[in-house]
Image (cartoon, rainbow over all chains, first blue to last red; front, side):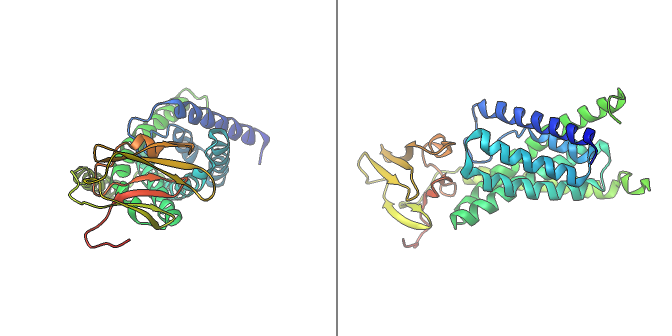
Length: 167
Length: 126
């Protein structure tokens, strides 16, 4: 991998982490495990459309592990990791069929899969199906949050491309 | 080479309608799940074991401390026949923020301490 590429990815990881930490400071208006805007995913969606799948995977792995470290919420690592994994798989797969005008669609699917992955991991860890009743709430919040982050990433990428800051 | 990058109109339409259907179903299910509970018994479950069986209607105001085997605790508070987690030392405190248990289907969950407080189904035994 070229050094320039690596530096760009490191920078993006740092940006994602900063957004993640700032978002942790926001009071959570809906006290359900997993309901959040997920602003750091703007970077993920951006990467999915701008970098190769393996590069995006590297960024997400770093972001998830460092995020758990910085937030001090280690027990949540397994949930965010499984969510991020499903989300990434779905987004990378779907991206093949979508143009830059439909980044928001990819992002919504990603957010839904992210929440689905989290609930599945919770069910596995808790050995209980009780948490599945939170899935509808998470699907609603995931759709809205995914649309928001997807549109943000789409706007960002298109403007950067138009201004030829990036290729 | 650029063929697969072209927007596939039909696939996109299917995808959008799929998302819309999931969204609408989820909204309906969410509204249903926030209805008032009709059950009488509440289970406190840790590590898939029922450790307390509570009857909110007849419970006196009290607090129950639950210690998690791997360290950490939650304090369940029963006040005016309502159950909530008033205190815990988990990092996210989602269980405390969830507030009072007021839904039949939505449990109070403390993920780090693998604790669930939920209404028991009819005929369900501990």
